Length: 238
Length: 114
Image (tube, rainbow over all chains, first blue to last red; front, top):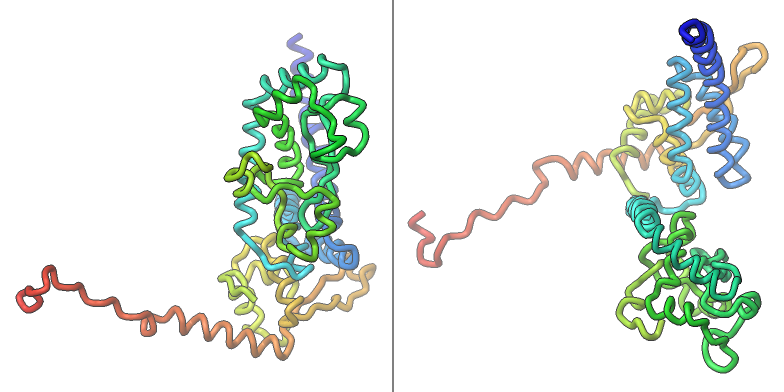
């Protein structure tokens, strides 16, 4: 046993360390290339070459090359929006950080409740747990919004009118979920994925969005939110 | 364009040697910026036409390194940069900060006694 440990520390660990240090430049390379891939297609090649050259020029050792690559990655989004001519909005970074922290902790803390609700939805009629409606997000980009399924499984698989005649009746669990607004909680996943925010205008339904673009262009200027001013002040209507 | 202190630092570096060619790392070091935050600034300046960039003329095989991307102020950019820097200096100089109003008297009739 002692001999084994000895061999492990004396032979294997230095080997691993050497291996790791040998991989550092390669790893920095990958990071820089990945950062460039997030940029608009027409400048991708230029920035790949530019950043690789900077990596070469970085006077420090492999570790500082890695740090350089990490910093480039961190600011890749800002670089992209600068290239597209977007106005830098530092406030948005704060909002995103808050969204990430709050959504992650909420998902973690509510996990027992979410599991319970998921089981309830599943057990009642054996259908899928989530309904994933296509909604329209920031800048008119569609995304799938997660929600606990509140209508019978066969009704959930086809598009249905939201209200009025022909609107499927919710299941018993579903009705309870809607009353308590628990069916909206899976949207925290959309927040983590960056498609939604905690606060913002409610996501637009596609046919609504088609009309919105002319009349209310700013409705789609922000990420849709889990809750917003209108949703909070006029709960019944939303 | 939004003038941040970081943007001004980059402009200052480029103005110090307006005809020279500077690559990213060099500018970052001279401006005292972390290299990551430099590229969004350069991209903004380039888009606004203040700064131009071109590839280094270099035979990569002979030199044994990659060619760099060099940045330089455009003629209009140099003028605008001078203005932006001068403007900031003017705004930050103590002469032009509005004088604080003198402390008002405690009570209306006490103006002379204090």
